[in-house]
Length: 118
Image (tube, rainbow, N blue to C red):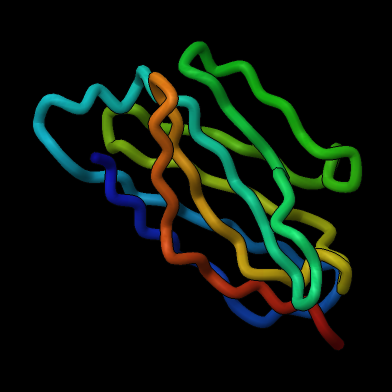
């Protein structure tokens, strides 16, 4: 089982940037590089949605609303996943969650709040 802890959320003004981090831990038998990692978000009153995903080979995909503004990356040696968020908009306000997937098994972090407001 993988444990995930997000950090880096906060309150920013529109147009500013934030970088979210997700630290993975667990059994010494977990090979982090084999996992597909993703960032999701959930705004108040809305369903949780996929924001960005990075697979074991480093391939990435983004939801249309964040393309060109957000960048997902990973550091397998540190067991970390990042979400660089630029040109933030009020509609990006949500709780952001990190998720791991491998072999049909998923783990979620507890989430970190991102608020974009002037």
